[in-house]
Image 1 (cartoon, rainbow, N blue to C red):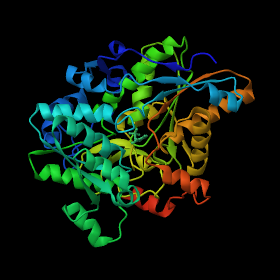
Image 2: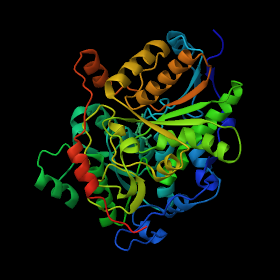
Image 3: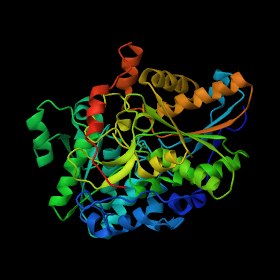
Image 4: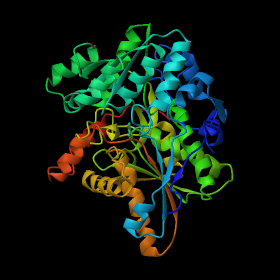
Length: 453
Ligand SMILES: *Cc1c(COP(=O)(O)O)cnc(C)c1O
């Protein structure tokens, strides 16, 4: 069997992040202040984020240098490997070539430390020693807890209550790195107390946990807030993935016809896809790009493109994005990292421009794809990543039907070692495809904020 693994030397690691904003045909709509309806300025965001990240948020520079200290930490696991999935190709008996970028090699087990380390660094630079955040499945909390430990920053994580109870090992991982983990909704914040007063048994949601973490940062000037996805600077930090993948595809003497990523808030997808989309926008090689989300939380495929809040208690600014409404609570699928009601404004923008085709896949089919992948390639993927695998397999099978050979590249965003309950339930036959309540969705969408555009 010929070469399957493409590695870069540390010297070949990207020294800059790539900013898609520099190459967009039209700029993404501005972030608005909910009280005034006017674009927010840096000072509006200053209570939440260090100034360096606020500047990255609005930067139009194509490349932003990665500080040496961050590169040093990246080198713990970067450059990450890119694989040709020859054994999967063989199992599928497809003429397609399938490549995947493997982000599960980071200490936290996913792509998320790419931004967690950068965010911790910039906070520390500005004298911040305490960060609050939220986590759904625990991946983001683990990544920020890891980054916080490297920079001696205290991290408090509001963890969605169902996950807190279902995934004790993720919690222990965060605590091992020194973070404090609180089940959300909690009694520590007004946002949490309000939810509990209305619904004492609330399983929590990412929207609620964000409200709690944001409230803590607003009320304590020594605490900043950190978000693991959605924001422009998070998409930016993740572009090391796509830049490395481009160099590795070149090593392989190949270029993808199709690039695929799963989308929760959009960051691992953006990290892989944005450098390829930028190449296309600058008049370079063409590429088809697919964003895959769960049918239980179909933000891109069912939500309107509208201004909405990022959280349930409406403490965040308004961003234009595909959204299911900030009060929408998706059913508790195992791919907890894909249960966000909104989508990154930059990802939403490129979907709206037609540069990206979204699709939704149900839980059972994704688990089946993940198991097929594990048996062929050896890696047990995170349930989130299974959505990308499902689409990659479908595209490869389409090639087989049509007798065409295409090059497919997808992001394998993390491993599933803490998600074996999902695999257990599937193999025991106890896993169902979850339906969201269309009534709840309509209600949630009916309360979208009214914004004059
Ligand atoms: C968090 C997470 C996701 C979803 O978040 P994005 O911001 O959309 O990338 C996907 N895969 C893994 C492994 C995750 O941990």
